[in-house]
Amino acid sequence: MSREEALSRVQEWIPGVERVLCIQSTPRQYVLVLEGGQKVDIGSVESLASQRKVRVRVAEVLKVLPRWLDQRYWDDMAQAIMDASEDVEAPEAEELDLLRAWLEAYLDERSPAREDDPQAWESHFRMELPLYWRGDLAINATNFASWVGDRRGHRIRPREMALLLRRYGAEPVKVQRKGSGANRTRRYWAIPASLLPPEWVPSEPSEEAANENAFAGSQIVGTPSASDYLANSVLDGEKVGGSQVVRYKNEPNTSQSSDYLTTGGTKPVQNGVSRVVRWSGSSDYLTTAKGEKSFSPEEEGEVLSDEGVDWF
Image (cartoon, rainbow, N blue to C red; front, side, top):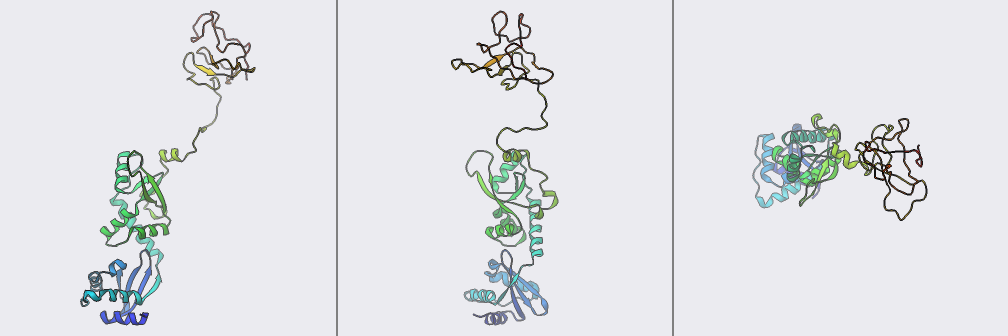
């Protein structure tokens, strides 16, 4: 039916209705505009499908309970309300303020679990409660929508909640469970700081998040400084007899199986600068005068000569 015919049908049931608005929010909201500027906020389509809910909301404003229609004809009346409606853009400020108010109350009641508390984090993950993930505060749209319906009486489907969050800057993320077991991934929404109360805005990424996001491989941290260890050390240079990997000055003998040079416990340096040792002799060990491998600086007869050694 046309908009005018539909509006006449609605006016037969509720006298004084001048207009019906359909607010293009998420989800859409239907509002009856009465004479004198009074408004009856019917709610979403879910509310419109219930005659009891519509009658209660009209009575709250007009203090008059509309007559009960035979339930067989209610679908026709609900359709007439929708046909009579005019599409109106949602007041962005009002919708945004409403979402912020929901989030503030939701987070106050269901405090997010932090990544440095593994036990609480695991519990929140299982129940799809708010948590921090890689430095962002993340919420599950299904859990949030359910809370809004239970605590605020505003029925909103999880998909509609997800669309509302996306509209104001939230990003979908897949949160991965830290431990083993089934259901290791869940869908969450990373909430931007613009939607969060100050007390819930993440200050900085967690150490674990920084490690996960860091480039895989060795990294130089801090300011490089001169070292007093042999280059390419494979064992702790502080230990007596530490072994250091070396490279031959001449072409190596491929038949040899070792490329290690064992020195005494002293840290060989030259003018405070680390040196690379390349042994050019036929043996790959530095030996003492007694022909034994040197593992102690106190061993008698130990000689560490510059001959055959390259200093840098």
